[in-house]
Length: 242
Image (cartoon, rainbow, N blue to C red; front, top):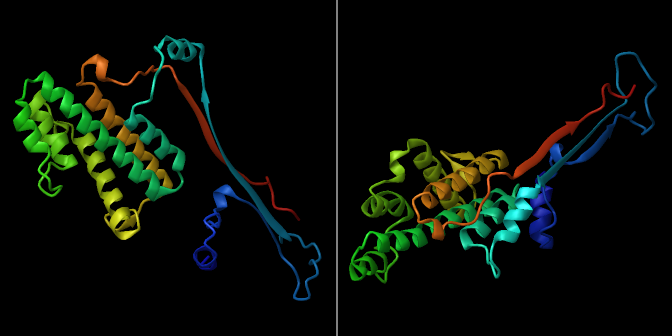
């Protein structure tokens, strides 16, 4: 396996990726020392093989088409939504997917707070001073935006929901690990594609929580009738080839 990342580095071939048993077609033939196939023997196998593939589809129902055509033109998807959908599309590339998911939360909370501060009649000059200090180290972090500032403008904080707060923290930690160390990890353990998928779903839940506190006009258009039909299956023969 070492030759794969080395080959990619030397050749600059980004297409070279480690092979995955779950996403590859493979066959192993057992041969004699001279390369000839062995004679069949009861209880022994001359080859093993497997096929794995992944399919993901979205079922677009009639209600979705009706909702699409009900949206006035022109329409441009909100940046947080585009970032989040792109993060799903990047999987199983864990690091880049987590970066986009974290960016989606960051963009959504920042724009939402501006709207909510106006609704709460927060002094505009004070609000600008809090959020634009000409030094990012002095400006509110995403955690502070989801916690302290959300409570200041709505009376609620993401911290009130322990599960969502943990999801947001884990997403941020995994993203920071990838950005600063080149490896997406949580508590020293590498983030798998499945774990990344869960973290991105967590980002979606956090964004939903934010938007539920916004006036209707500032929420993204959505319908809850989409059926996401996806499955993963590792296919192997019922019995190895004799």
